[in-house]
Length: 407
Image (cartoon, rainbow, N blue to C red):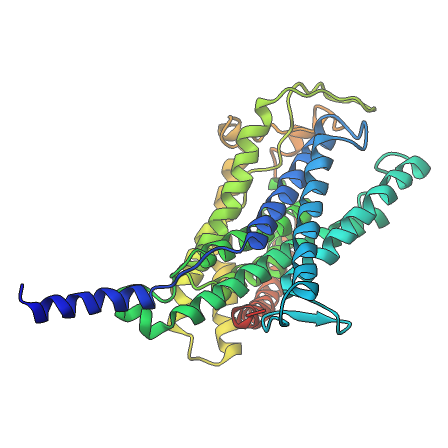
């Protein structure tokens, strides 16, 4: 190689090094992602604890996992606010200022407020049970406050991830990445964290609506009405906010893995009831149900969205919402037939997950579908289609806003 060729090769390598994104994951973001994971793990564990053992004490491992997540998120983001506000030489441009004194990232503020709500709910919940009994109602004031904390912390983790994703893209630049032989849409680790955080949000939404998603209700129109309200919003917002090519699929994959792991792992541990009335002898931890088949509609959404990106927003929403409902019904309806059959009674699908407070014949009712008139089902599907379009439109708007976040 002659000297001129060597100089050109050296210059090309230098240009690649200069333009390639140099992304160091902020430790606050890593801490918040850990906190969000701890919150979801604790939430699933706590529900299993209630179905297996009952609320024997406030200091259960599940509660400790939940409140550890809240504390880590609050302390990490609180430290960052203090550092920016009092120890930074100049006010960072990528922050939000509160009361003209405190500066911190937008997602950090959400995590702080969520942590305060969660930690405030702890003594409130303990007092509530002491005053009114153990689990008189699921939706009690302290539980509502705790749920608000869950949502805010998970939302904060998502906002922090998309902000870092946007900053990575700004640092790299689409043209620079193309010259360096990299993909501007997937450069850096932040897009994967966006999908991961979105998957945790999807898991939380699924858990909060689980009473409408029992397998014996999967042939009812109400099942698809609730699905159309919740899931198009979450999946389309994820697809639009992350820079991954298959963002909705990645988000649905995280949800599926989280819910599958709890189905497979929880029954490996022994557990027995400690709070009456005990109607079924439970010997191992009871898991939540097998996850919904959201991977199929998520993949279809990812394949359609790039092809209609230039269309009117409402037309996009109509096409995406109807597509979600059609694929969701086409996959979940026949899969429900399998879930109520004896073939699903194994470790993989674990449809023998009966809580201790339910009578033994309760499982028999889960082996047959609830029924409704065909006209009612058709009417419900019409309502579900309208709601799916509205949910998709909201998801598009929310995802577009998230993708623009830099603070």
